[in-house]
Length: 107
Image (tube, rainbow, N blue to C red; front, side, top):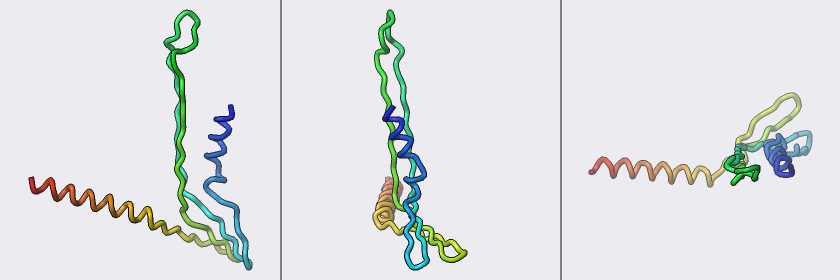
């Protein structure tokens, strides 16, 4: 059952919200965008009381910084993270799609 315990821990709120940091009366609570999924299955093809012919499972998790909540006095403000790598990858992908669309028009 250790796999299920690790999965439960990986999908907990502690992955999304980091430990608050307090300095000079301001508290920052870091936050991340997290998504994941998993699946398990087996093949019931075992014959004459034999164990199933195959079984398996797995899961995946992706996370990246989203920003931080700033708590000051009686107000809360959101400060989004600026991820240059994600912006660059998106720009490259959009350029690829544009070039592909232009190339298909020329045919």
